[in-house]
Image (cartoon, rainbow, N blue to C red):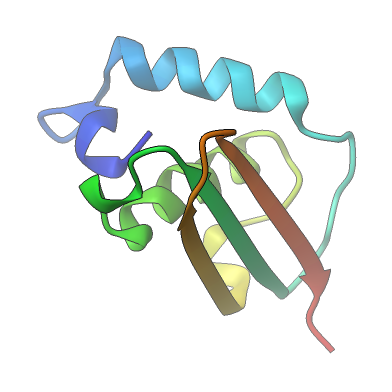
Length: 99
């Protein structure tokens, strides 16, 4: 799910976004990381060339805020992201409290 496919206009979530959000929220652990955080993402995608990695991150940050895992995506002070081709699609997210 990319930011480009997440919204119609500026405010309305697409059905694809709602479905993706529900699936991701179901799989997230029940945890909270307060304050400033460091985030690391690994995207394993069948067709990784169709989107830029920054579009993948924004949707996930919004879901992490909505789920209460992080307070606010403005508190992400360090970010790394990697995408790679893989037939077994997955997303790995590492969240660390910033020292």
